[in-house]
Length: 174
Image (cartoon, rainbow, N blue to C red; front, side, top):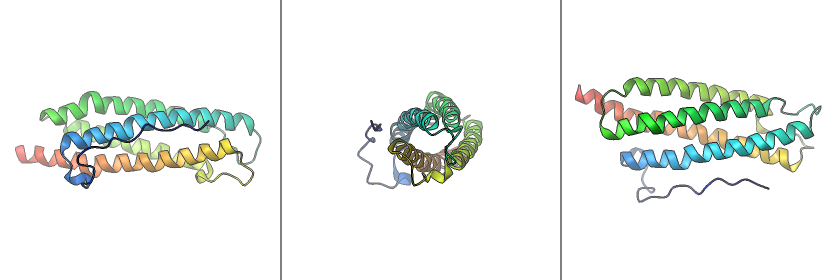
């Protein structure tokens, strides 16, 4: 049975480029369109990966170890996103001045996520299933490819739009 992500957040500024969105709306869009759906999709990918690894053990293209990598990615991402939601985003919206070190730490965690995505892609053969792959395997790789693209876009929004916006404001205050 296919797993579906929750519908995306749609708000009054969705027709604007992210760079023009009000702060609270952009943060809400990141949380609702990426944070929850990423964890939802990772859980589904973990379940699918366990099935594929068990069913196709011994196949030359089997993604051995993918479930473990997905689980590690889930754990890392859940903790990372919880820190953003509990500490960084509220600090940014409240006007607190001392969050720049958090942006640096989060940037390092984003580098770690990119490394995990590369490991997932390598383990999953570039998300290209073999010709004899079953529907579960195809669904798994489709979901992994979707996660890869959406996580990279999520990181881009934070690093190229959200964080520079707030860092600039802090520099102006100093």
